[in-house]
Image (cartoon, rainbow, N blue to C red; front, side, top):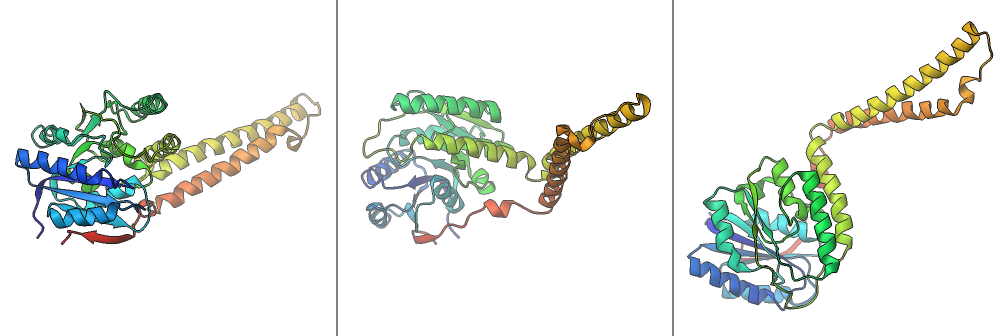
Length: 323
């Protein structure tokens, strides 16, 4: 049986050959100084540089380091999800591989989860060493996310977070959902969520792998997980409600037009435009058809589990240090 650890550090990585050894050495110094039993799980997300060769050497030199290599680039969420599944630590800590997250924060993050009982502690880069082109969109993105999710933390996108092991084993992270792990955790019943101001460091090597498009994709993913979290188990509540409203609107318009025609002919003895000659009639037909289709969509979705459609199996090329 694999031996449980105090801490698992999960590091998703893509083309970070300059920083990975320095980061692992730094983490090891902190762990040994605190007397933690630990493991470092590095998930190479299809790097095209020499990152994997460096990881192989690190696993030979240090038995606490384990490596996973994807056949191609799947994204940060896939790397985190795979690392979570392999983690043995009571507390799981994630951090980026670019040295902008400080391992010196690990002991306090561990204490908040282990001793104070939080399910999740999110880092807050209160003082950021990023250009305004990243700071302004990030603040707007975080404000919108706080409003939609109701989680009062400042920095959803911070890579430095700490979790209970049970939490990371209970959730799935796919697509670009790594930004919304606090929201996914909350909607799965893990409500003890807090944040901690953490040290943010200027990037030492290379360039960021993310552009402004991540905010566009991130917003779409936020809508997606909001919908899935609320209606995954009861899609009929959404589609059925919308379909019923649309059908009733179409039915009301149709009844109104027919009633108006009868009233003019029978009571006022006046000729009125034909029902099919009025634009409202066609709007009513569209509303009726859409209503029926939405209702049927909800009925079918109620019988189909969509979770398997979202769960990805990632093609792993190599693994080192795993039993």
